[in-house]
Every structure is written in C-alpha cells, then in structure tokens.
Image (cartoon, rainbow, N blue to C red; front, top):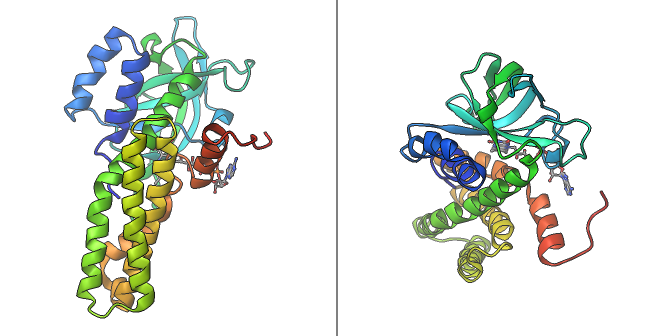
Length: 290
Ligand SMILES: Cc1cc2nc3c(=O)[nH]c(=O)nc-3n(C[C@H](O)[C@H](O)[C@H](O)COP(=O)(O)OP(=O)(O)OC[C@H]3O[C@@H](n4cnc5c(N)ncnc54)[C@H](O)[C@@H]3O)c2cc1C
C-alpha cells in the first residue's frame, strides 16, 4: 500500500500550518512543501509514548529570549534522514495536566543538537529513524499556536493521517485486488480454499469502498478506513504469498509486501487503538479504564 509522497509534509504539516499557523508560517512553508522542495517528517512517537502519545517526555523549555531549548528523543520517525523540517510535539509545561502542557513545533532538522539515526526494519529498508535532541535552540516563531495548544493541533493532524491512510489506501486497493485476481488466473487451477479467500477479499474491498463513499469525510470514516484498509492489505499479501507458494520466496515484491504489511497496522495508530476510537467515539461504548 503506497502512502502519499511526502505525506508528512503535504498532509500533516500543511494541515497543521493552515489550521493553526501564522500568516508568516503559511508564506514560508506551504509553497515549498506543495512543490516538493521541502520534505518533512513527523516527530511524535517516543520510546515511552506511542499509543499513549500524551505521555511524551521530550522537553522544550521556554528561554528568556522567547524561544525554547529542546531535549529528548523521538523514534519511528519516517523519512527523518531526508527531511528538512519535522512537525514536533514536546512538553513545554511539566506542571500542567498531561494533555495541556504540550506544544507543537516546526523543527529545522539542520539545527545543531539534532541527531538522526536510521533504523533497519525487517524489509531490509531504513524507512524510519531515531531522532535525538540535545540543547536544540528553537526560535520563537517555530511554535504553532500558543504554548499548551499542542495536543489539539496534533489531534487534527492524527485525524488527517488516519484519513489519508484510508484515502491513499482506497486508491491503491483496486490495483492491489486486480493484481491478486490476475495472479489467481495465472495460477490456473486455484484450490477451493484460495478461490474462496480471493472472492472474500474482493468482496471486502468493494464493501470498504462503498462504506467510504457513504461516509465521505464524516469523523467515523478515518479510523474505520485505516483499520479495514490495513487488514485487507495484510490478508492480500498473505494470500498472494500462499498462492505463489515456494516461488513467492524468490519474488522480491511478494516478500516486500508480506514483510511491510504488519507495519501498516501500527503506523498512524495501531489497529487496537482504531478499534478503541470506533468503540468509544463512534459507537458510544463505555470508555476503557485509564
Ligand atoms: C511503518 C511505521 C511508520 C511510522 N512512522 C512514524 C512517524 O513518522 N512518526 C511517528 O511519530 N511515529 C511513527 N510510527 C510510530 C507509530 O505511530 C507507533 O508505533 C504506534 O503509535 C504504536 O506505538 P508503540 O510502537 O509505542 O506501541 P505501544 O503504544 O507500546 O503499543 C504496543 C501494543 O499494545 C497495544 N495497545 C497499546 N495501548 C492500547 C490500548 N489502550 N488498548 C488496546 N491495545 C493497546 C498496541 O495496539 C500495540 O499492539 C511509525 C510506525 C510504523 C510501524
């Protein structure tokens, strides 16, 4: 499932800047981002704060000059090794309530004190990185919104991220299912189990497209799209591998899809978290204990 090119810039950073940035930030960042000159990364997750994002510990301490001094660590930051800027969440007030002491920044990745270390994933690629901050001097105009507004800015960004997974996923869904059907035809005599699985996946794909057409941009569309799309992707890659049998092990694309699929159920909020959101915010079920 191919995400948008520079998703972190065109969808996440751009939306945050348009919604909550100043006119000057819009002028500086939107055009180079849209033209593809400026690549971005998303610096949200930390070793101790993934699903529980508000538990983040990176600190941006206000300075006498009106800026902030940043210290801490992020992890799983996709494309951070290529990015010129990152959207960053950091704690500016350790005494405030968990969600209220967080602020949202645009971080120049070339600043002294920013260190990026790529991580090798099981596909063999190095898509994401650890990013370390040691006394990074953030200018006053690098904050988006006011200090303490960061959680709200980030919630909108995460909604856009989930929505884009679903939207980008639906664009590629048809292609993925066509390839699978073609593979079924090429394999000649599909066994009854594989034929049944193939038909069921194609039906699930059509049902997802119909659901998203109906929901449009309704708030429940984003978590549902992300959850269902990543589940179909995982099932598609498994079925393709089993239809190819031992030959699949020699096929780079099959292996790549199979190894990449589990990550899609984690990136942008895990499937369990999407289920929690659907249960609590869409179906109105009792909240899980916190
Ligand atoms: C391919 C990929 C790209 C990524 N890119 C980025 C990026 O660019 N920027 C960025 O900031 N992050 C990125 N991430 C990180 C991703 O957002 C986190 O991995 C994700 O939010 C989960 O956090 P975690 O890894 O800390 O797992 P944890 O939060 O520790 O969760 C571990 C397990 O517990 C489950 N779990 C946790 N809490 C609950 C709960 N309340 N109810 C039920 N189950 C629960 C989870 O579903 C999971 O199975 C990326 C991840 C992947 C895989």
